[in-house]
Structures are given as structure tokens and as C-alpha cells.
Length: 122
Image (cartoon, rainbow, N blue to C red; front, side):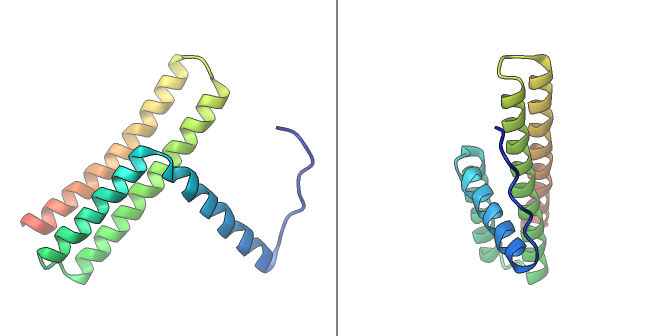
């Protein structure tokens, strides 16, 4: 992809453009089944927290961890896109890079799951 770089935006135009880029990223991420499954699981956790009488502070903890999960999933997807473009065939580099991104997502999910168990069970 080559071409002339568009001029930089500043002020309010930059803010609006950045919001548009974020929405574009969210739309791209929605095409990932793992992301949709995580959103569904996090929604289920919200219902479980509500049913079990979680405090607002506990909901805030869940919200923070949920945003971390979604952010790590977005980064993992970005890594996969880059690797697929840079290394279209199979390579050990590509495998290791994707495995490390997947591990990061798993760590965030385990942290969220442990927190949910702590809130709901203990």
C-alpha cells in the first residue's frame, strides 16, 4: 500500500478522526468469533454479578478486567493481521508470534475468571 500520506489533523478534527478509527477497529474486531464469545461471556458475568448481589465496586472491577480482555483481544487480532501480511506462508516466527498473542488473551481471561469466582463464590 503506497501513496501520499494525508495531512495530520489537529484539535477537534483529530478527536473526531480518532473516534472514527476506534469505531472501525471495533467493527473489524466484531468479525472475530473469539471477540464475540468474550463479549457474550462478559455479558453473562454481568448477569451473574447482578443475581448474586455484587457491589458497585465489584462491578467496577469486572468492568476494568473486561476492558482489559477486550483490549488484549484487539492487540492479538492486530498482531495476527500483521503476521499474516508479513509472513503469508507457515513459519516458526508466525506460529510463535500468534501463540504469544493467544497466551496474552488467555492470561486476561483467566484473571477475569478468577476475579469472578472470588466475587461470586467467596
